[in-house]
Length: 504
Image (cartoon, rainbow, N blue to C red; front, side):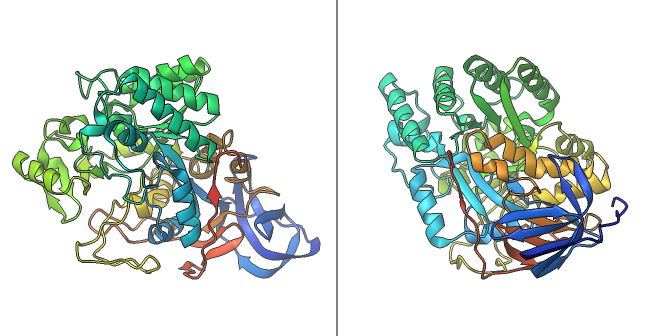
């Protein structure tokens, strides 16, 4: 902790809705790092000051950090229960931008009808639109889960010229309906013609939104790939002027992260807009029917390239053979599975490299909860059932970043770690979503999305074996001026989340 600074003895006679007093306030944008009092009125920060403040609700933050609420650009966990796990990890906004949904209007309407504990938003899904145009699949607005249909071959077939035009028309329509950008799961359809990705990028540029891209494999991972994924993304960004966001650059680059980041840095220096994100774990997770989990493709992301890299999440089974992997893929193609890229215990340097990647935002890639076949989940249930399974990054990404990156290794100054969790994600979005200029900051006039935590004790508790354990150390979390975590306790009757849409 920084040494406390003496606060002014002056008194502001205004009575605010809430006052956070005596905390170490860190605003990554202005560089403020000092003891201050924060007054909140309605859904906005009204004042950040040394003066004594009066409030209808007083939050004593002495000895704790007061920071902007964290913004997760990459969360497939969009239901109420999963949002509650994320808010206990300091997240105040969680967006589905890599996979996206279609139609976005259906997804926004569903979230508004049900209520959400944190702010929410969606890109339009290139994969869903492609499945609809090329394979005749129904558009559901994401109701069937992000991984549904990824394992089928029909949507990965080459698109005819008329089909490409139809896809672009539908993508453009969804963008006019408020989609935050275009989610492009290119790595799940790696044989797609490169010209199609160029066309999607040009559309994104013309509409003033980012394209959130899961890149194709690298040539080191797959010598037969149509084009190296990192070279393609950076080249297309330079050629089209589009803002291309490189999703989970750590897990798609594996041990070649240095080369990939050099490409990104190079194209940025030439004026292209390429942004990146990371998560601090050594295993990825996606649908077991996807291209990545075919026995002949495990080398792309797996540590050894053998079935033993795969854990079928529904049962916790470590897959023992090629035959067993094919059997599970056939029986449950949308089922989620882990794939180990490296062992965190035996390769801690790689974890440090990931969390310290310069300029990268932190994003969870959280996945939906997995339940037993006969289990029915109440959307408002709390806590989640211990039998539920997911990737621990859905509960612990941001606390783990603070634990590993700041407290244990000193890789990141606290202010930089907070920028990765809040300011950088907001800046990635703000050209398409003007309201994001008022999030990710602790400044007068900004939305009151605020976290209060103890930097000496904040930690993740979720593990691969017990993944639904909430993070610890977040004493208070405020979303749009409403306290949803109070004295480290979740307020289950509060659903203050609001939509994040392009143009707003």
